[in-house]
Image 1: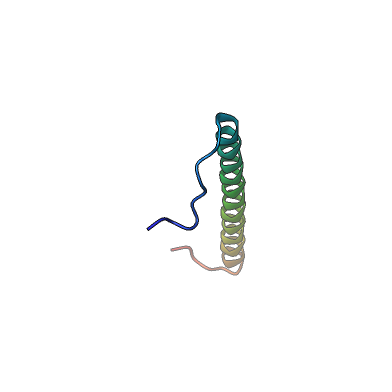
Image 2: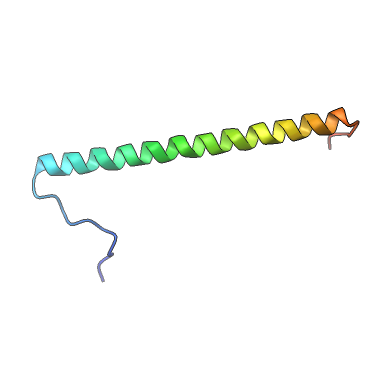
Length: 60
């Protein structure tokens, strides 16, 4: 059974190269988005840790 999400093979080398570049751009954009999410989570954890410390909490 063929995967319905697969694209058919490229008709020529130029099309194949364009498809590869498009996939690389999409992968790069996803990686950038993932890094932004992780950075935001790290900032949230740092802020929570600082707030906890300011309240006299002890880090464990």
